[in-house]
Length: 379
Image 1 (tube, rainbow, N blue to C red):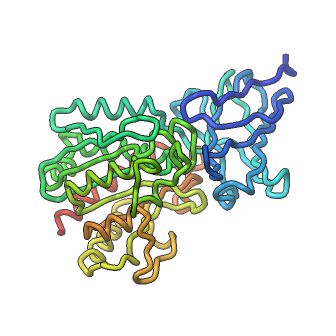
Image 2 (cartoon, rainbow, N blue to C red):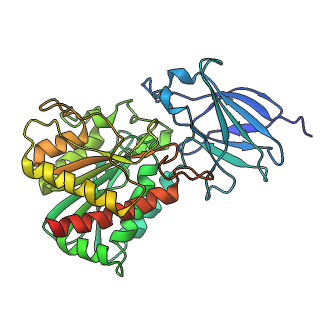
Image 3 (tube, rainbow, N blue to C red):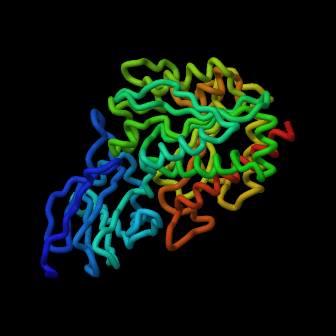
């Protein structure tokens, strides 16, 4: 019985793995590239026949991944109930089989799931949309359709003059971004929460929890069904390449944008941080002050955020206007930002059992909205 081969499958929503070989409780695997693209890093698969056996799973060829620097210090996510996601013992062997991640885990049940980060399924997405849209002060709007015909869902709430846009998962493998959305929506729709009540009075929110449903369902890291990186399409989106961005940007043109958070995850940097729009051509002192004020407020409100580590700042006039944050800040004069969470752990406040997790992502969403309430009142 102990020599019976384990069975591995990724034939489900957001699944991604290719099985090269199986020998008892050991397996050699590789990650499938995003369709029509060279990007790969996201994995999500199920192992059965695992009860009480020490699994040794070797994912190979990872030096060619989108972000090979992301593997050092990384631990794979694992769950036996698809509710609680912990971290498995993981070793990075850069010189073995083109870069190999070795995952070792002994489950207590026959089934276990492994993923690059805790998945956020399309089924859970639809539950989030339907439950939130059913609330009396929330309205729903379909902004358009993805390449494969999935809706680009938008939730609107609040009655204030400040137009706030929140969007997540332009890069579908960054599933922590939609867990963040759960937390943000939890605060904004809680009638007893004072921050939510204030924000609904002063702001009108337009919330897109998943800007790339096709890539999410297909198990992509970074692209839509056409293999297009949506966060490089904001200067000139088209129906053929990037209907998702085209739909969102058109809706933004209708409402205007005063404040925007584009929510992401970073493969290599083990910290939570924000990237801004410093290099846009028409930046104003008011925009810069608003951005600096929000970062300062968030830094004070939660130890899960920091301002010392992040991306290099673009020189004056050199911002990449194909990216959402820069295009939105330039186009609307908005205070816009890209929020990044780690795939690894937050090294300033580590959690050995879970690393960065769905729960902390959701809590950060709440903290970001509480910081926004303070920012609005200062404005």
